[in-house]
Image (tube, rainbow, N blue to C red; front, top):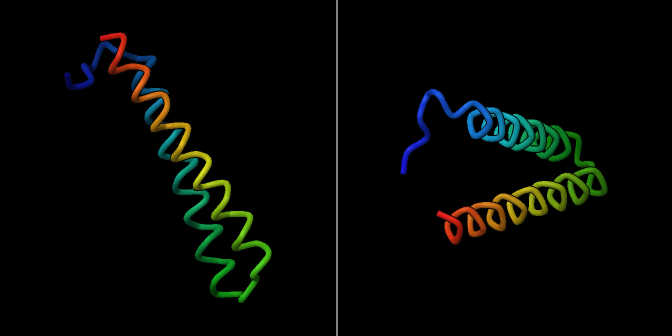
Length: 65
């Protein structure tokens, strides 16, 4: 089921998650450009964790709908 315009909590959650993804992507880009291996590793771990959290939340929502 698609997100409806009246579903403000889902829209806020999606926008927040995407903002976090974009922020981590920026960190990854900067770390790669600066050859900052430690910063890159941290940003990749944060992004991986964020993606895992989204997958978990999505799976839970599928079971409850």
